[in-house]
Amino acid sequence: MYKIYGDLYSGNCYKIKLLTTLLDIEHEWIPVDIMAGETHTDEFILKNPVGKIPLLELDDGQYLSESNAILNYLAEGSHYLPADRLQRARVLQWQFFEQYSHEPYIATSRYIIKYLGAPEEKQEELAAKKAGGIKALGVMETQLAQTPFLAGQKYTIADISLYAYTHVAHEGGFALDDFPHIQAWMERMEAHPDHITMAQAIAG
Image (cartoon, rainbow, N blue to C red):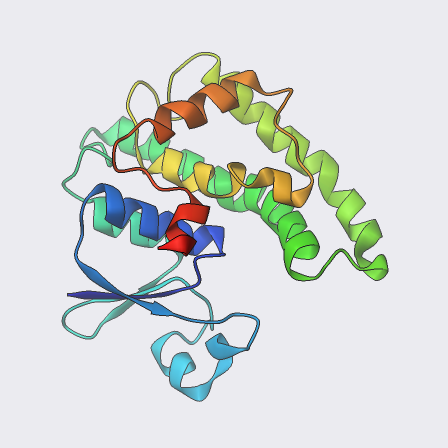
């Protein structure tokens, strides 16, 4: 059985929980408290020298880190990861976009507001994140005006990667009122009978 080390308040960890739920992957979820510094203990660093979650422990004791790498590993052979070479590359394209053009703005803003309480000394940084977050949402909106899902016609792990922080974007100060195609896309994902939101995952 897989062991997954994570914090369900983290979008990157929630991605993994969502996929394991959709695919009914048996696993043991091991809570790790980021704010308590549990990713920086000697014991955890032995598992992942980068000191980050989520972290997947395989049956043979090997470890795999980075949320999107874990998604690709767990989705192998399922309809959430296309076999076609170009379609798979498009999934990766959106996952790279998520990490470099979306997460640094929307997830970081959420962290400052939700975890740190939006302190005065962070207001300038928070304001600086706004334009990048709006731009990222605009790119998604443009794509979703053309296709029902980010990588094309089918629901893939590209959608899971971007949904994670987008569906809680309001917690980072990003309203989605001006992004109707994103809202419709989220509704399509949430219509899946096994879908769980982050709040539902936290509630258990």
